[in-house]
Image (cartoon, rainbow, N blue to C red; front, top):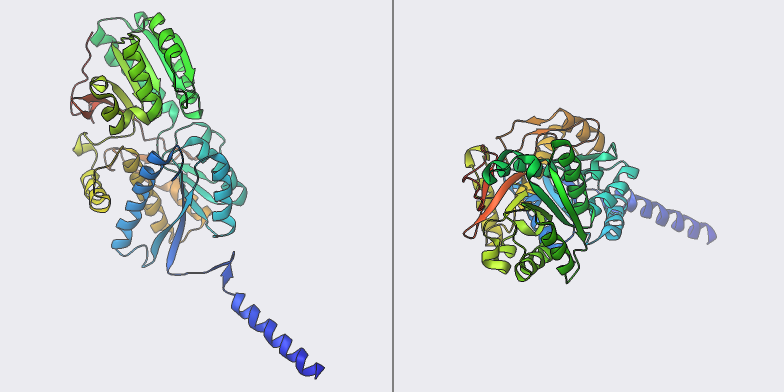
Length: 409
């Protein structure tokens, strides 16, 4: 009897072993799909543009799957909601260790990107950043990170170049005579753009008369506004999310702050929600950001197709250029993946470093050439836009502009 029982137990254990032989990290292997993690803030304070960013990646994947996928395999985005840096680490760990994901895209927020990419670097998983701008994301020179979108320092350069090459002339002043102020929210996003702008300004002879930082969660920016008013700037460079962008505009009006040239930097100043909230106060505001939709179509081939896809799926026009930038970035990921044929971090990185695209050949107008030292795409840049009669028009540089910059002295 003992012998029979022993034989039954051995058979049972062999059966369990056979059942588990196809498992990987607790998940069944699937040779018919290519899985990529998609880590974005889909809830919480950053959800509005986090979801908008995810939509761009989602549309690119749906587009390629409708065409048959890659070598007959469907691409699947495995979603992860990361509303903050702590969640980004835990969700990146889940994707890597439970879902057996070997490449992740994301993430809109620099703090989320920074935290998640630390996890992927430790685990040899490739992280593609499609939207976060902090230079610190790529400055660490990690082996397993690539970024398609321009970093904050590129935003800062466009601010200073625009002030030098356009604003000074239109205001009838020498660059050195202009008084420039900076107001920024104090996260990595705002601080990086502000600090880089100050460095460039010093090099280019642009006079920064005051820098005001604040928390984006603040419900009162009157002290910031009053300090700006005291400095009497000709130009104000602002870096804000949506709520603080609206608050800054309203309290500037209430407290009598008048600045001839106001330059926002992505975030809240890009969004239609900003224009809807402040009405005529948005008129004339400049905004340095990823490409928006009133832009030279000859330089941004594929944008009309993207807009059609977006409206068909979501029933409305895009809320900002974040979806477009993630769409373009995801198409680069998929192009590289199609050359490799499998989600292998080392092979994907090697293929990405050989991948190039010329400026004016992508939906954003960006070119693509990754820096082998840090994984940053060297051929993308922000453009200058301006709110005019309820529309955000691209106004600089000339190759993407649809209108001349308007400045009232």
